[in-house]
Length: 315
Image 1 (cartoon, helix red, strand yellow):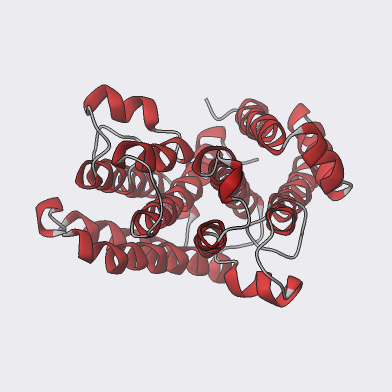
Image 2: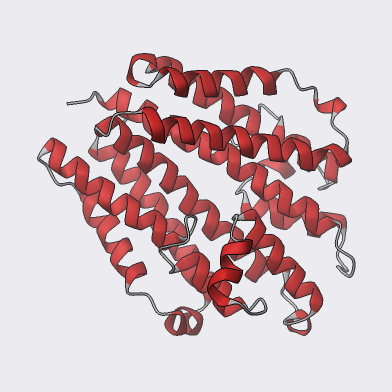
């Protein structure tokens, strides 16, 4: 049986790498939306939504008075006081990897260590606003390279299971937050719905989830809030959808049940959420309120993460 500390290190190693990628995705969306004409918002209101999606709005405004682009960029990318910044995520992921060096493959270690070293050399003052797209693409490429190394080299044992749980627990949280921010924060005024501005914003949300082309392949029509919500919530074939994440988590928890010969509360929580998504109906979700559904999902997803930690003695 794997030690709880080792399981925790693997879970958080992959969760932090996923979070680093998601921070880059959220910042990319905020940056691209800030370039869009026709958004009659103050700079603070515009970037508030990005900070809220990343769940770092409170700590940001404890440190800064206004959400100016350079401040948000540096806080999300480089600020070591922000535990969710890309720099912090890479540092924490590398620290977890070092603690379980013998439990991961050489390819995994080299990928994360190289990424950390190269990112550590970047000086925030050297990055202009125009440099952001290239830097964000670099972060997404390198985190994807790490995940590819993990998927292609690690044994399919309990270590792999905890890596997958960390990845998909974090990914589900991110997708829910991205969708909630677009629907609830960015576009509160009904006169924008269906407008060209609305369509451009939905396009950017899909691009943030690497879902732009796949959405067109499935729906073959203009952007519709209903279809996009369905795509990012209920479609299991979409790799960043909530349903896809929970298909993997429910299956992976089942693998751990088989390996350890024990079933815990986390198995029940994961199975329940998976069943709700698998049998979900967008009519019901919109009738109850998309924001309310997503808020409830984020809370349940967090509860699953806490239950996994308790069940497998992470502490």
